[in-house]
Length: 203
Image (tube, rainbow, N blue to C red; front, side, top):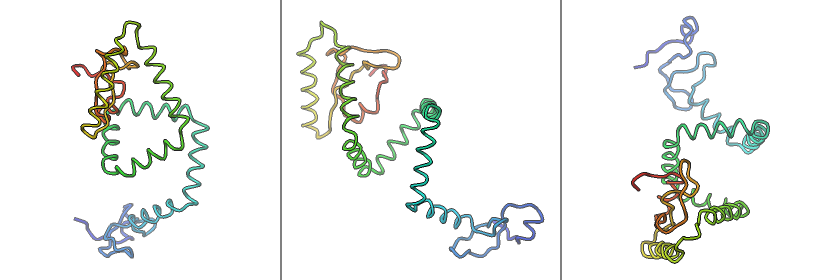
């Protein structure tokens, strides 16, 4: 329960907030900032509106680009360290955001692919190179092709895109597998993407 206190008393006692019991001009019934007499919610809403202006967005984007250029290694390393320390929480947050904003996420993904075909070509070429390096001379190519055909069949039958997953990733963090039929399986794309390069024991 909030107690009414005047700004004068708040100043005398060094309180950062005071409460008048009267709504501010924005309709908020909250303690006000002693130093400015302003409602903190009104201040937040005003700042959000300022930050949303094209001029402010452009200025922020320029600042971010300059900072990334000056401190690229530090910032990228900081991001990687945070992700490694909070991998599960970050991935869960991404999944929740995507589920709540599926149309936007799909549109953003399509736009990124349209604007970055060179990156996609590079990644595809890199994956083909890794698969070639991981394929031993004795691999049963007919069985491998059959697994890819099974993935296509499941996609057509279920309406859910299926990838061919390497049970033991060919570029894993702790262990690397081979591109052979006994290390391959069809897997729904979401499950395959979320797995990434992790080897799940018992999978």
